[in-house]
Amino acid sequence: MTPADSTAPNTSGNNASHNPDNSGSTVATDVADTKHVKGVKITDLHKSYGNVEVLKGINLEVKPGEVVCLIGPSGSGKSTLLRCINVLETSNSGTIEVAGFVATDPETDLNKMRRHVGMVFQGFNLFPQMTALENCVVGQVKVLKRDQAKAKEVAMRNLKHVRLDHLADRHPDQLSGGQQQRVAIARSLSMDPDLILFDEPTSALDPETVGGVLRVMRELAAAGMTMVVVTHEMEFAREVADKVVFMDGGVVVEQGPPSEVLSNPQHERTKSFLARVSDHGEIDTD
Image (cartoon, rainbow, N blue to C red):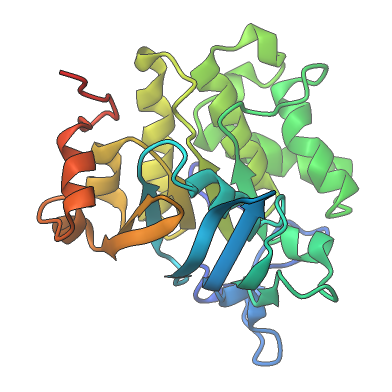
């Protein structure tokens, strides 16, 4: 998914196909190759660490173009679920379908599947020895086999989208936390994903840098990018999400539109959690 212009990415996952060649452009969907347009479907997913079951039969669907926010207390299984989607964690049972690939099938080529799935971590995970530009180029060259010139063009376009093209030659330790996270988003976009997984992307940031990251995420959502976001930013979830999923104790307690889950929750566990969390994710302990 190369940006359609100099400021915004092409996120039209419903009508443009992932193009794995070196061109860095999208092409019209072929009838015989439609798996990239599919979102995420999770069926009866279980995950344990030793004797501790952290995911207890999760069922969830994310349609192409949807933004789904996972909320809930720490330890509820949100991040584990996200990592299972990209098979950074191996589930014990159940089925995960991602962009048309069955991630839980041992025969699935996970490297091929992951070309369609971007991930933005809480801790940025940038290469410290590389500049912002180089961080956005390396995956394109090594994984997508894109030539250096085209990879740099795509990287600069995405750095411009996150408003950091003027800092392309900076190393991560020369950037603020918020700037590093925006580089991480640009890096993910440069890999042409069909969907992006965000694992608490603002939780490690200083409050004054959160706004820039959320602004970029809002723009991605408005452009139609499929996103699954683990977050404590209730205001963001309220404004941007198509679906909010409240998890607790390894299960989905409640899910639905933000107007229902956040404004009119039906379950006592959801009500109790929301009563203690501000719009910016701060826990009220009074």
